[in-house]
Amino acid sequence: MTETGEPSRPAPLLTDDNHFYWDAAREGRLVTQKCLRCGRLRHPPGPMCPACHSLDFEIIDLAGEGVVYSYAILHHPQNPAFEYPVLAALVDLAEGVRVLSNLVDIDPSEITIGMPVTVDFRPTRHDGAVPVFKPKRTVNG
Amino acid sequence: MDSRLRDATAIVGVGQTEFSKAAGRSETQLAAEAILAALADAGLTTADVDGLVSYTIDPVEETELVRTVGIPEVHFSSRVPYGGGGSQGVLLHAAAAVAAGVADVVVAYRAIKARSGERFGRAAVGGRGTSSHSGSTAMQWCTPYGVLTPASWMSLNSVRYMHTYGVSSEDFGRAVVQFREYAANNPNAHFYKKPITLDDHQASRWIAEPAIRLFDCCQETDGSVALVITSAERASASNEPVLIGAAANAALFEEEIASNHYTPDIATMDGCSAMAARLFEGYGFTRSDIDVAMIYDAFSPMFFLQLEALGFCGPGEAKDFIADGNLGPQGSLPCNTNGGLIGEGYIHGLNLTAEAVRQLRGQSANQLVDPTTALICASRTGVILRRP
Image 1 (tube, rainbow over the protein chains, first blue to last red):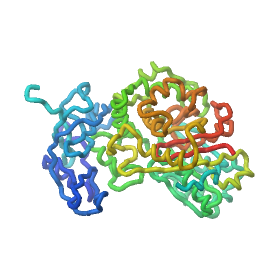
Image 2 (cartoon, rainbow over the protein chains, first blue to last red):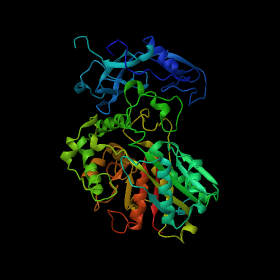
Image 3 (tube, rainbow over the protein chains, first blue to last red):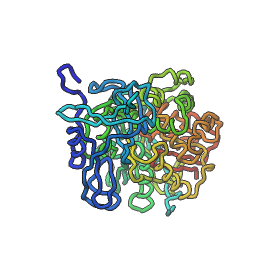
Image 4 (cartoon, helix red, strand yellow):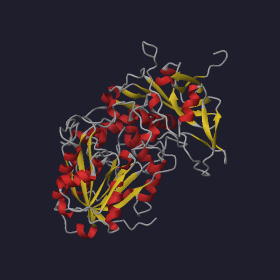
């Protein structure tokens, strides 16, 4: 966030194939593509199901629950749009989709592979938003 | 698979510019200088050249190159995608074109100003919705998250690899120390006369923790390398030809390029394994045939994944293979004897090919004793070269 309140995170690049994902994020929803013919989920999105070649798909909401599949604490080089270190992660979602994202609300030293995380959202420039992930806290934790 | 390319063609000339941090001239000029050096090495002229191959990401236009060096007539031109992972694909394209008879003499080149020009490590946030055939379509998923550089993309694979097999930064460092030892003796290397210890490696700052330190990264470099490829028959009359014994490419479903994050297990390099199967079993070579190897070390962890995918050791065993000294001049698989991309410089992988040719010709700064067969691997593309 800049001093003026405008988020500094760059807005996602919108294409014909991907805009539904980022449109949903702006509404606070984590979604994925599901093939209408064979039911296969796919991410990153694409125009055709690689398994059955159907062009028809629906956009389904995901629960936003997953585990950290891998991560990295990025120190250098730095871009002024981000706060460092950047906490990068691959999250395996419960539905079987893997997404690249950031971890938030966590000390870098506490990150472990396999830790449960839950979705949150962060604003970008141009009124966009991106799904990010925070540690899943237990009730007593 | 059909192995008719085996020994059908040869590299007859190698040329390069100096490697630097600021070439002070255009990529077109760098390519032209390297190509003329390679042709002189081959005893050929630009009038002999009728084929051109480079990378999709290379900035030098074929037409501009032809106009610059004065090639009368081009019969074949192509480009290989996948960035540096496609670097050895230029030899597959060249060999296939020559073996098919559509070109007689093909020049493969890469000209790059990776330090003074467009740096890979510049952490830019601009994204493109359409591909430049080097991963830009997949990278749009990384940009809004600050995952902006090759080191950051590959660190996710590297950390998963460390987690899966219990590999440490020190383990990566042992490979780097060996590459820097080779580089220290190579006057063309950025790190000439600058060897490091494992402590030096461990003291270098984090780029992407806990996998990639500064000394695990290749050197952003300006320069150019060119190779001249022709038929084995025509090569026999030339000076010190090196036969292309095998050339292969394997790009698998759902593999991305530098941001290869979506295959089921990113701690293994399955595309490299598939490529290796074609290279070895497909062409009738064995691992024990290889006297010296050049393996694409953009970042040291990626070297480990390839070493395992190539079958020189099992999954997770690269750290022990390396700790046992196998990469050194007395080891079972001397690797990256120019210092690699980490120690010599980063001409996007084609300088590794040049070093393999030098080893087989007996011209390396770190010359091994009488090597006859060399492997060059850039993950999804690879080549086996051998002395006739």
